[in-house]
Image (cartoon, rainbow, N blue to C red; front, side):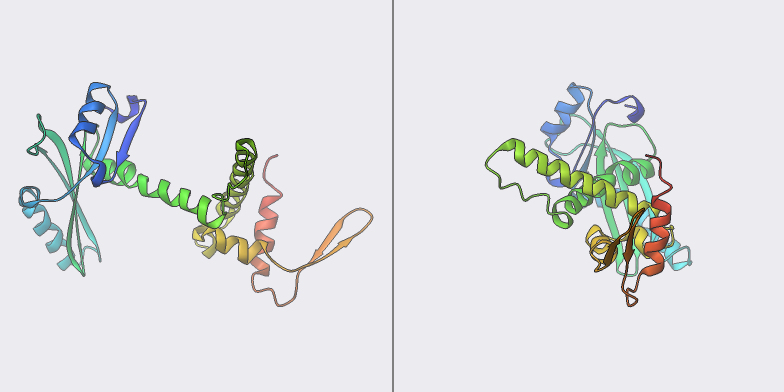
Length: 225
């Protein structure tokens, strides 16, 4: 199944990679990428791959060397064989093997890193929304009030996401968490002076991120409306 022609792709951790879920996806033409727990059979299928990754690291290829492979496999509870992708990583701590099962077409590396690992990024974004912006504070008695509050939190998320994207790629702020951005660049003491034609904001001379804030402010005003 080509991922470019699939309307819905389901990704789940290995705890939810049940054969019932796979069978349902296959019957309904839904793409899936599920984590698959390792066992002696799976590990035995990737011994050559693990050895190759370890040898690549010893040869100085990189600090962490990854290898990808694929094969057909059927667990005891499966009625059919399915495509299993293996990711082997050799590092200083040893060799780590991970497996996923999928009905999608594509290279093993692309399916693992681009589709399956993207699930973790989605979880990180939800975490940032809840933890760093306190969007889970929906204690109002009316659903509409809670919905409006979520809308405001989402607007704040978008503003911080945009601000972070304006930072240079090599900058500390480009990878900073939202609470770091908020405390470092937004929640800052300042003196506000209202003038006839403008409003002047004076930051304290001891503010440690003056250059960063000035640079981001200059880039912000150039954004399209």
